[in-house]
Image (cartoon, rainbow, N blue to C red; front, side, top):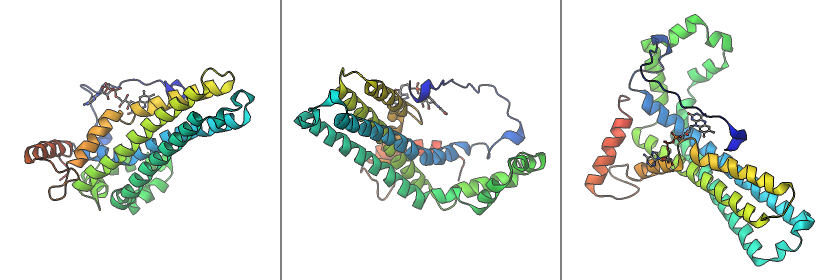
Amino acid sequence: MGQRACPAAELNFNEVFVPDDRVVTREGDGAAGTMLVLASSRPPVGAIATGIARGAYERLTSWLQEDPDAKGLLDRQHVQLALAEMYEEIHLARQAYMDAATVLESRVIGAFKHPLLKTFEMLPKAVRRSGPVRKALSSERAKDMEIEMLIRGTDELSITRSVGISSMAKARGADTAMKVTGMALELVGLHSGPIRQELQKLWRDAKLTQIYEGTNQLNRSEVYRALCSGESQPWLPLGKAARAAISKDNASIKGGTR
Ligand SMILES: Cc1cc2nc3c(=O)[nH]c(=O)nc-3n(C[C@H](O)[C@H](O)[C@H](O)COP(=O)(O)OP(=O)(O)OC[C@H]3O[C@@H](n4cnc5c(N)ncnc54)[C@H](O)[C@@H]3O)c2cc1C
């Protein structure tokens, strides 16, 4: 739908042979690394979605003030209340991704700031992709270092909760974008002019943010997992059996890292 109708295809990895020098980290470590990457990539999706909502709000308010077709609409109470609600939603979505960014900065992102990683990124691409460097990176020692860097300064509970708060920011931003672009379209109604097409484009972009980077439902299941995490201080106090089930599930996701 959105983002210029970006084509998406499913990749199937059944029975694929992966040569040793193409294996990233040790077998079994991938899930924990993926969770860390998702923890860092979901708040930006929340921010993209919030930006879409803000774009719709700003486009609508300039239309209401400038377009002869919209004359008198700003004096109507239902329009004023809708604008206030849209602004409120955008403010809360922004707060959600800023909260997630703050948590990630203090609890997880350090993992990506290791001086060795920074130095490696500064090397020219040709050097990074050269045979000797590729060989060094696929050594057992390098794989141990990768994992050590990834989990340095963090722990399992921090990862689970960071993924939870990141997922919350992503789902909140995406739902806000859908709601605000939808409300803007309703207010414009059947008025002619480019505003309708522009808002429809933003609505389609908003829909995509509910789908990619894990659908909002999957993100909310991560939020629930985080709510139940923490033996001594769970965010959501639950019975022992429910906590045991979640903790078993967490262990299977993070299997192999410790
Ligand atoms: C335009 C576009 C660009 C994309 N770009 C990328 C990209 O760059 N990189 C990448 O890796 N992926 C990308 N994706 C893939 C995207 O992440 C997936 O489409 C998304 O995660 C949903 O997975 P799916 O399509 O397999 O849907 P499914 O997993 O089949 O889900 C279908 C429906 O079932 C629900 N559902 C599924 N499982 C559960 C569950 N356990 N509990 C509750 N509800 C559930 C979902 O919420 C959804 O409503 C892109 C997708 C699109 C549309």
